[in-house]
Image (spheres, rainbow, N blue to C red):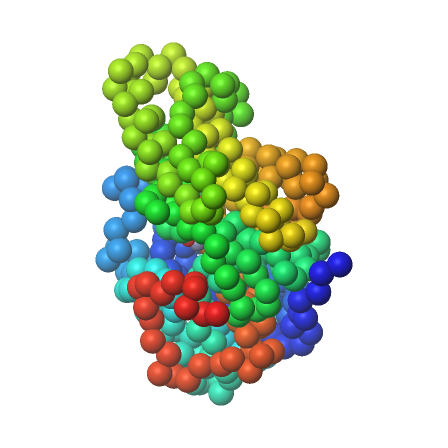
Length: 344
Ligand code: KG4
Ligand code: ZN
């Protein structure tokens, strides 16, 4: 049996997330999610990617209404808040500053603690927002638009990163291949949807590093292989779109699942947690769940809405850090980059 993570038992924490293209606020009462509002900046899709300056300006416009709505849905007045947490790293600098400065203003005016939260670390603890909770130590597969890593979580704040991507992140590969297939941006959810009616064995794309002893990943090779395949067989876009999408998705899923299960075995870890935007992927969830149970392990994740960027996970990690007395001063800075491995 593992060790239960001590959950925040009291207090009302407001979480704020503005690191990329979601403006989000959430209220956590004890360890229960009272509300979460996520406003996605859909206009970036016409540029094929997130435009940082436009993202900051949109956050600035929506952050206050989003917070007000989160408080209203939780039936909480701003004066009842006991702490405010905001993502301060990693992310787009201008976007981060909007959330952090809003949090500073609230902390100062209400006289409550301010907590800066690491976005990737928060994804890991999004799993605590569900009824079935992982026990320590657990293995976290973090798969987002910017990060892919395997992390052994020994306690809140104590991590060993055993593997990460050497090039593209898993979500980045989904988005780039989706773009080649003409599926818009972000393409991950669309690849997921159309793959359901596609044949994953239609074309065998490479599974880079799948049997290497290291737990690092590489996804750019799969992407390039899809690119060459489409160059040589342009007709498949009209005749076999869903089959190509499903075949690509299967290659990514095979690599992620094989390496995750092998790591869980090698380090004798029972609970496997999959978080981050790509963890919303139905094929990845199904495969991890099946392989985990085959080896007597538990597979845990969060509801798809909380797999992608949201403030509920920021409020959760903020509350956990508050329990440990890890609060920040108004001098809290924002950083575009900050590896998880530095917070051991
Ligand atoms: O965690 P997230 O919302 O933002 C970052 O922190 O990067 O992850 C966004 C990524 C995007 O690349 C998006 O295409 C991918 O998650 N994604 C998915 C699915 N839903 C979102 N990829 C595959 N299948 C999905 N269902
Ligand atoms: Zn994220």
